Length: 148
Image (cartoon, rainbow, N blue to C red):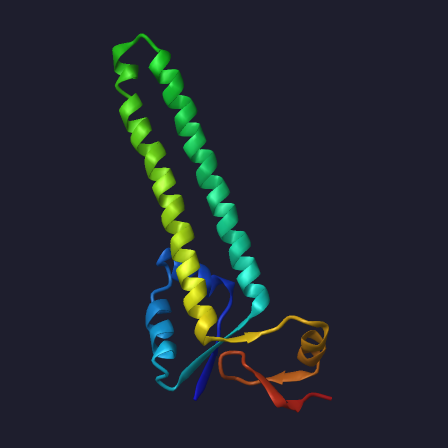
């Protein structure tokens, strides 16, 4: 059975639909087609922080659109008043994007977490990693042959 070690970018790419092999790889592991995924638990924390940062940025953009819309509504020039509808649409789309992003991340994390071998990040794991040789297959640690 092949073990594929995945990182933060895999989870983020899966969430954003930017990882071309992400879904087929996950599906193959879910269907147990000779493939197992492994991910350090710290990578879930990093991915969560990444998504939270993106949500914060999109909320700020939503608020900016809302502020600009409010200013445009106060304007007496007809052409500027007509811009309020696109700003309303953009503001709503920001919120829709945020909802989709959070939902997609939760789904991807749930799927990955349910099938992957989770590598704990403890003092012992860090110590083991410092004494481990690495196999040439996708960076998987070769726990059976520590380096000296």
